[in-house]
Length: 253
View 1 (cartoon, rainbow, N blue to C red):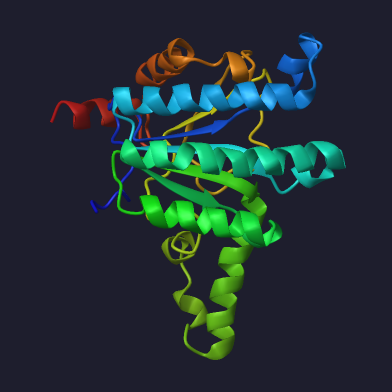
View 2: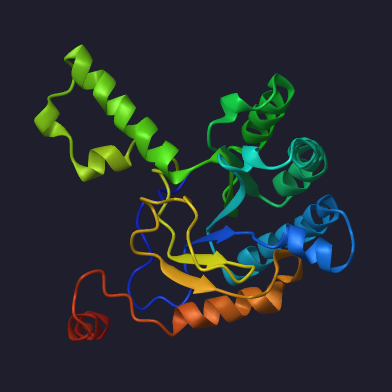
């Protein structure tokens, strides 16, 4: 499998990695006097459209925030329905993803899920592990603070065991213990639903991402909306700490 650690270079019009907070399912349903779970079901169709759009535009990595570590605070009935929807989606979608060359990975504290759901996750990841058309990552029971904490704990255990000198700890070493460390960091972050915050999603990985917010609720997010986000990204200059003049000189070198 090709290495994917490098991020999109300045001047590239297509992001290699797109990360999305899929916000607005509940509000979409409420405006139609439907139960919240109806919004989540329609939101699954928006996921399908976005995966298809990523493949057609040449995006290599798509990471979707499906269920945060804070979402356990929602009403118990809704959480149960979401877990059932998750299992049903794994049953109905994984073979299609595999057929189309999509690799599926679940990031987050999967130990918090039922044993049945954990088994389905492992089976889906194993089935699709060698696919490379698109790397699809689903963040479930995930939080950016959890991600950084578990990376720090991993390094601390090695220091305590005497196998890692404390002074050897670097940003790159810590990054290697984070979720998705083998993939490029997100170039473009999209959030639907009108809110303008990252909500504990990929806190480390989003350090240099371009942020794009839309008022569209997630079930209404289609390929045209995705293309609009890509157009916004293409019009931005990514400097990574350099001046605009330096970036322009590098592009024309």
